[in-house]
Amino acid sequence: MILYPAIDILGGRAVRLMQGDYNRETQFDADPLEAAQRWLDQGARALHVVDLDGSRSGEPQALDHVARITAAAGDVPVQVGGGLRTAESVTAALDAGAARAVLGTAALEDPALLETLVEESPERIVAAADARAGRVAVEGWERESSALADGLIRELADRGVRHFLYTPVEVDGTLEGPAVGGLRDAAFACGGGELMYSGGVGTLDDLRELAALELPTLAGVIVGRALYEGRFTVAAGQEALGG
Image 1 (cartoon, one colour):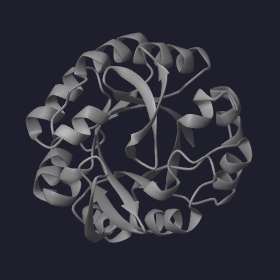
Image 2 (cartoon, one colour):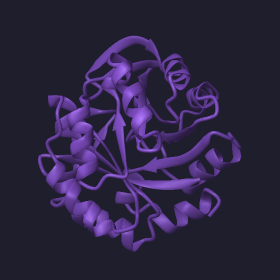
Image 3 (spheres, one colour):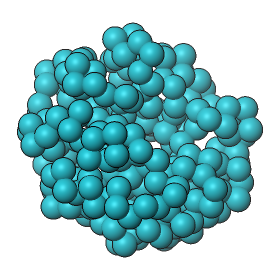
Image 4 (cartoon, helix red, strand yellow):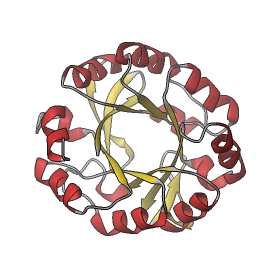
């Protein structure tokens, strides 16, 4: 299982939001590249970048930062999400050096696009199911749909999607521990695919709890605020997940 340090970009800065609320922002680095370099120096095996401005606007706004981060990362894969709602924007993100493109709003509203992208590059497309009370939230988490997260994952798995990201928005940024119940549902819904989890991790024990679930489809955990606040290092977090 891989630990993915998160780099959320808003207004050109590395920030974290509380429960996805743009009005509850904490800035950690004036330059997102500083955050990326810190996680790389701590032994990151992958990075997770989110263009928060892109999530709100519907099209990428931070690909210049993505290109700088991927250049610094070298052989370390960087997955990127935020505003990727067309084939052109996904191509732009991949051209900027992203190893994978993460689609959220498009995963719900344009499954045919997702299916086409997966047919072309099955290992480079990730479908995100970000949920409040189990229901998928889109457009930068500012609009809640009627779709259930596990139902969306199951539908997309049937369409050939192999990589998924599940985030329970209620715990994101809280450091209060992962939402295990929703994670179990998401993990079983993705069939033979792989799932990444994000949200609520605040301690090494939280990571050990996730590893102890022994969910065969759980392949990675995204961590943000706990790393920025120095609660543990990337290397210690990776060890807690099983090395």
